[in-house]
Length: 312
Image (tube, rainbow, N blue to C red):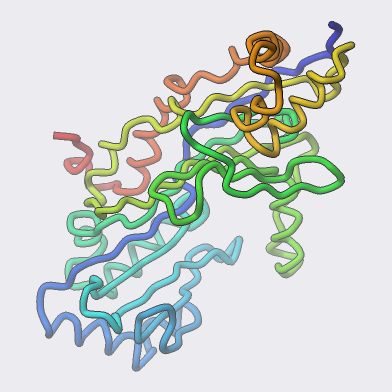
C-alpha cells in the first residue's frame, strides 16, 4: 500500500470555548437590585441590548465585552421557574475581554465577579483545542461506547461530526473551523470579520453538560476528557489497492468505526482494523500533553483570585 505525504498537525493549547453559569442570589433585596438594572436599563443599555422574556427568564441582555470583535455576554435573571438559580451568564471566555466581564459583574452583582467565581454553578462548559494543517475529513475519531449523533458534510467531505447527542452529559465535536469562520463572517460587519486561515484548521471540542451543576471554582477537578477520544490522521489522499478498505474508511467517518466494521465479515474484521490503525498516524495526538495547558485556561477565567485555584 502506498500513501501520500502526511503533514503532522500543529496542536494549540487548551482553551475554554463556551461557559454557562447560574448563580443563586442570597436575598430578595439583592434580587430586586439586579432586576432594577435590567428594567431601568441605565447600566446594561450602556453595554448593549436588553429585553424581556427569553428562554425561561423574565429579563435578558447582550452586553458587548469585546469592542474589537463585537463579542457579547448573554445575561438572564428572574427565572419563570422557581427551580432555577436567579441569575445566569453565558459566554465564550476565549473571545470576550475578561477584564470587561469583571467590570460589568462588579457593577451588577453585590459581590462582584468574585461572587460569581465563589458561588457560580457551571451548567455547561466547552473545552477545546485546534489542530492546524489538517481537515476533519482526514481524521478518524472514536470514543468507546459513543455513536455518531449527527454529521454534516459538503461535497462529500466531512465538515462536522458530533459523537454523542445534544441532550447527553458528554459530547465530542470535531469540525472544520475554517468553514465555521466563513459562515460566521457572513453575519458580521466588515470590521468584525475574522481572518480565514490559509491552511486547514480543525477544532476538537468536548462539551460537558453536568447532570448536577458544579461550582465554578471546582473547574480544575475535571478529568481529562480527551483521553477517551481516539484520533487517527490520514494523508489527504490515501492510495490503496484494497478498495474495500478505502470504502470502510469513508463509511467510518460518517457512521463511526464500530458501526462501519459491522459491514465487514466477522472473520475479516481484524485485518481491516489493523489497516485502519497502520494506515494512519496517531503519535501527533497526545491527550495528556495537550491537557497540561488546561490549568492556564482556568487561571485566565478566575484570575486574580489565585487562592481559588485549588482542587482540594
